[in-house]
Amino acid sequence: MKETLETETVSCPLGCPPGDEFVVSGRDRLHGVPGEFPVIRCRHCGLLRTSPRPTPAAIQHYYPTAYGPYASSSISAPGALARPAQRPRSLAARLLTPRTNVIPPLQPGRLLEIGCGAGAFLHRMAQEGWEVEGLELSPEAGEEARSLGFPVFIGSLADAPDPVRPYDLIAGWMVLEHLHDPLQMLRKLWRWSAPGGWITLSVPDAGALEFKLFQDAWYALDVPRHLFHFTPRTAARVLRQSGWELRRIVWHDNPNNLILSLRNRFQERGWQRAADLLKDVADGRRHGRARALLGKLLGSLRASGRMTLWARRIEDSDR
Picture 1 (cartoon, one colour):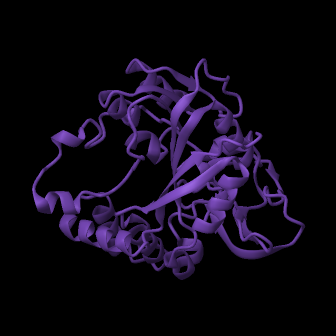
Picture 2 (cartoon, rainbow, N blue to C red; picture 1 turned 90 degrees about the vertical axis):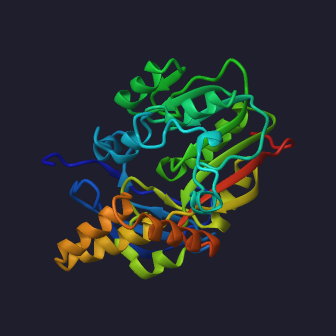
């Protein structure tokens, strides 16, 4: 990219005193936009953040139309339209079915998905009886979700208007780490939620062993799109300070962080055939049973590097 993208240096959003330590410096491995981006840790609370980082205006350059999550959230993506009752019922199939987009066991109500992409999750939850709405930054993906008949606000969470009625459940799949001000946005979502409301968020787990092993090649580092890098402890602290009580963490049965981190290292060493094989495995084109078993093992050990947080609205919180 020829133009110089504007960056900003930010302090810890939890209001800690000054004092950070350098952890690692990474680059955009997904789309190859130039630049090196440091990840630092607050010495007081342990929250990891990317700083300096692209400004809210500049960050859009790192989200091309071909950005992977947009395509995977289309109802044309494999398995997007499958309802739970339509999934394989054999013991082996149930054991190997990965846990992703896990939500609390709630009665259907009003649901908002932050970062709804092209609408696959909205479609699935509407089939289950939920009254769904979405919010999506990408105009292309948002219009695809709208074409399914769902109300979708296209723009940032910061710019989104207040809802007509509060939500019983707010979901965001791999969204929180992309927000420039996660506390402010979580407080806004608290105001949008109904009494007793829930929020469920999936995020990479920066406390996982694979981050320590792979460092800058860790697939889920994904700088500069990932502006914050949460561990279970720091995620709980951010949620509580925003008006939410963390109730449960579910680690995903998904081995792709490990597989694609290995792929990054293989590409660095010029081992392209091995890297291509790992990409095929991650995409499910080869060794699917072995991939599923590895995912189950990592999930059971809380070592997959991906987790879903369930948190409930704190009723006496003043936000």
